[in-house]
Length: 115
Image (cartoon, rainbow, N blue to C red; front, side, top):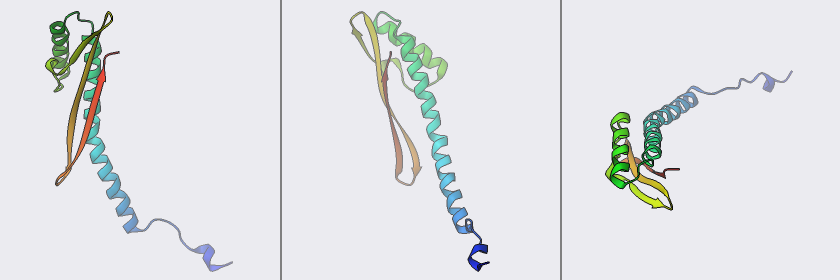
């Protein structure tokens, strides 16, 4: 048998450290992004519930009640409420910044409207 057949294969210790550091950084960023996604889902649910109102103050009051329960930072005054035909459409847009390191930030821009 040839000597090259018995050569070991695998990852070196330095390679393992590099992979672990990259995975740890991705995990830290994901742990900060996931709460903003959950907040977006709560805001979307509140906007869909608020469209049941008939007037702009009523829509904003319904949204503010949902905000008090789910504890997100967007309020009823940040909504764009329009009437399209006979339907009320509640639209919203906002940003969340996540500090990564030093002067680096990850900016998440969310926008949506009631269905």
